[in-house]
Image 1 (spheres, rainbow, N blue to C red):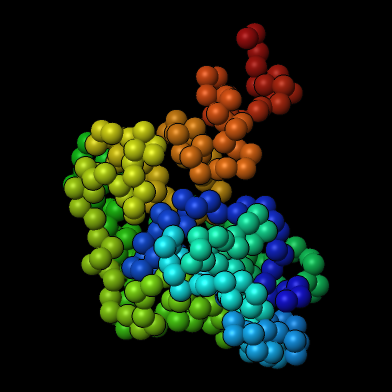
Image 2 (image 1 turned 60 degrees about the vertical axis):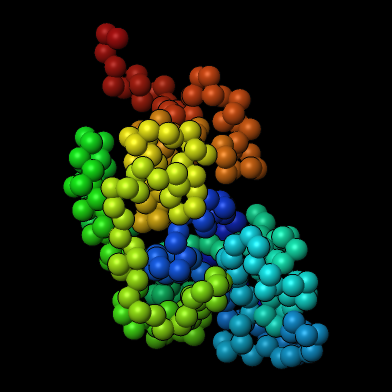
Length: 308
C-alpha cells in the first residue's frame, strides 16, 4: 500500500473501542458494514507478495486486495497462524484462532463516513468538498424516542426507534458483498466475509432489526450486558439502550462526549472500554467528575459576566 487520494488522510487519532465493534448486530444491521471500511485495494504493484499457503503472488494496482480487515468474534477458528504472515492480502484480524489479534492503535477497521470521492490534488492535502452536518433526521428520531422513554412512555419510544432500525436493515435481495463508487475501484468495499453466518445476497433483515419494550427489561443489548454500565432498573437500561443506539446511528459524528456528559454516564461507559489513557484518567477523577465539563476560557467568562 502507498498513500492515494481516494483513501483520504490516514490520521491515527480515533480507534474504535471493542464496544464499538460489538454494539452492532453485524449480521442484520447494515450500518456497521456501510460505515466501516474493511477492504483496501492494492495501491502498489509488487511481485513478492505471499498468500496464506506461502506461495508468491503479484499485486496489481486497483484489482488485487491489499488489506483485508476481519472484524470477527472471539472463538472464531477460521484465521490460523498462516494468516499472520500473508501479504496477499495483508490480513488484519480482530481474533485469530489462538485468540491473538492484529488490531492495535495503528491497525483497525476505521470509519469511512467522511470519505470524499470528489477530492482532487495531492494525497497529503486535507482539503475536501463534503458538507458538515449540524443536524439530520436520524438523530431527530432518537431524540424523540429518548424523550418518550425517559417519560416512561416506552411504547412510543419503541415506535420511533423501530422506524430508524427498520431503515438500517438490509433490503430483500440486496447484495452486500461490494459497495463500489463508479469513479474509482478504490471505493470498493467488501461487507460480508468478516462474520460467520453472512451471505452475499440477503433476504430482508428489517424485521430482525425490530425491538420491543422487553428489550429494556433484558440483561443485555447486542450481547453487551447492561451490568457493565451499572444499569439495573428498566429506566437505566432504557437510557443505556439509547446510548447504544446512538453509537450505531451516529458513531463518528462528534456527538459522543455531549451525550455522555448530559446523561452523566461518561465515567460508567468510558472506563470499561478505553484501556489506553482514558480509563486511568477517569478512574482517578471519579470523585470530582470534572471531565463532565469543558474548560471555558477566563476571557470568555469575563465577557459574559457583570457584577457577578
